[in-house]
Amino acid sequence: MKNYQCKKCGIKTERQPNAFNCRAGTYHDWNDLGEVGCENYRCKKCGLLVESKNAPSPLGCTAGGYHNWQDLCPIGTDVYQCKKCGILLYASKSPNAFDCPSGGYHQWNKMN
Picture 1 (tube, rainbow, N blue to C red):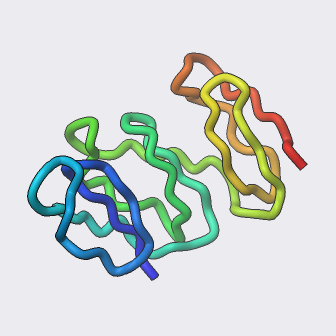
Picture 2 (spheres, helix red, strand yellow):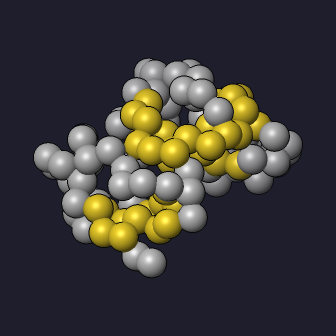
């Protein structure tokens, strides 16, 4: 299974995408981000969260230019949410605190 992101509207899918019904108009323009895996990555520019085997492809950031991926943590069963930016993810340990989009460091709260 692979991760795909539309370069026009920013939507992400893990299924084989179709080109129809892009929110940005006409057709989706899909970018292959790479294999679905066991690490949580977040783009520091556009905020996209991806579960990937390796660092996802840098191509096609909706914020312009290239994605700037940050490896947050391995995927797990515990739910964490940042009190500042609201990002929610499943992790096996407390995620990386650096580079919260709301400024400074993430303030992770374990939800379960």
